[in-house]
Image 1 (cartoon, rainbow, N blue to C red):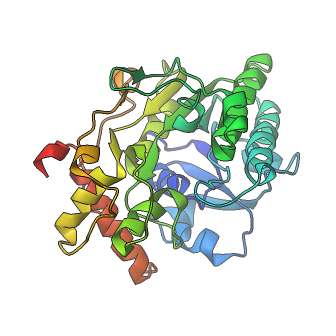
Image 2: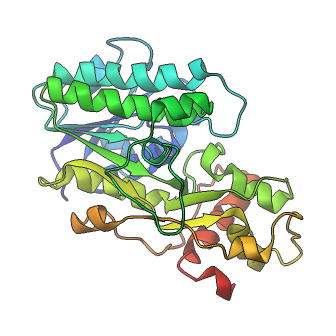
Length: 339
């Protein structure tokens, strides 16, 4: 196993991407030091403790993004660190302080702790496509977004795109700090992440999909979709591949909500689309997000949606959501005009 004898830290380990990352790391033989906000909260720990290898090689540490030095014990003695902890508040009425401060200050606090540990060979930062494509440029069908794009903080602030601003400032600060302190860092920039859940709570990125099933009216917006298991795997490959460097966009498909709705209707034939969802809207050409760099480094190879079982602890709402997100991603390779 590639991780046997190696110790890594995963911050925000109870999160959506992080839970899959912990699962895959344990499967590969890594010893994982997992940080959570509250080690006594079963919602943060039980689903991780149930993973294969957890009993022998999973250790919890309590840490806060806003507390300097909070991650010192967790990263001490590690070979690598995966910094995934950051608030994901996409669809709520939130303030700048709710998102930007934890994202920016938390990232710098983690990196300051890493800078004290000479054994750390690489830090993998979970960034986002939110730090890539929000710069005010028109996203027309002839546009291809890639790793050379950076979101504009001024544009995000003026547009009150607080999550995008937080991820942009956090990644920007991370690059500056890592260069000044000679930290070997790689950033992973996934799109909207969907797929099976390990944690017992519904996360923000898959909530819009469930809204479509429940008949909640949401705008016909365009998103960049990627499978959570591919994202977790890319983090590990970015750590293990010695030539990996810089940032990597991870997006399997760009599609709007009506395109997703058409896939959902295969599961739920009686679903009726909102009035503003038209066939013309579903078939509108979209911009692309380049996979070339991630595929060249062999960090991204779509799993083609193997149907994993969900955790026993999940309630029926989460089971429905898991089936839906799995089904959608399996069909994202099918041209929407054929649905």
